[in-house]
Image (cartoon, rainbow, N blue to C red; front, side):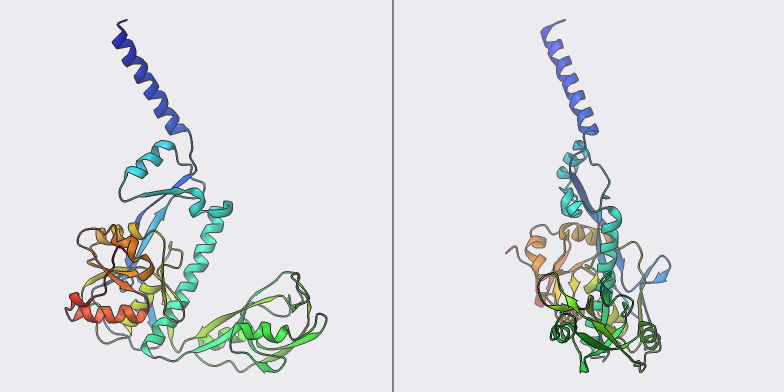
Length: 362
């Protein structure tokens, strides 16, 4: 066999072996890619994403699309060929597996965490939207969780509304711990509560709960020192004067908060927020209307542009990254609060695109 032919054959065999190894050998990476977008003013799976009852709503037009990112599952074993292809594909991002699933989280654990964050983002979106519109609502302190085998177990329950501790009214979750820790371990502390069942019934009727009861719990010493505890985590809950339901399946995480809040504002406002424009965006939101950064901004930009978006509401802390790789035809609008977003949309409606706060590469 001629030397040249033998060399080519050997090289081909080596290449085939490398390709086979690349397909068979798993690598510790996962892939992120652009996911679908959903218009918060429209429908998903045949029903409105935002459903408001008990308050007058107004017709909307245009789009306020939330954006998503697809990720490979926790148990998916990416091979070397797929990793290299992902690195070479502009719209996809290959990241270490632990970036998406830290501490060995299972798919079920990650999904549960994402569902909890998604639920919290919906609650904060409602709070931020009603605050932006000046619509009053009630904020209350509740039992968020009860520690297993703690003194409070069986006496206090998640959802109980805490009105007072040792006769002192509480208005913030921190007030509960402040009153309990005034006691010494072994002392009794008295909680004035509205039981969760009564609180839920009153909330459904959009009324203030009036049924209260007092329970005494003996404190114990915390594991961290001599601080007195009863074994609960206090949190915040809100009672709205009308019903706001957000219906969207198979989506998790907190990054749709801003777009949900804007969708609520639009439905409760006579004038269209977008002026008929196709606006997409992303960003977490807290109860004060502050917009926070999210992950996967590049893929969300691509997903938004592929869906037809012309403008993209971008969290201020994501602006530099987004500006470095913006799809053609998509204009970035920097937002730091929900108020920033509504004011920018007002400029967009008026045709003042030159006045929109943009993003720079830093």
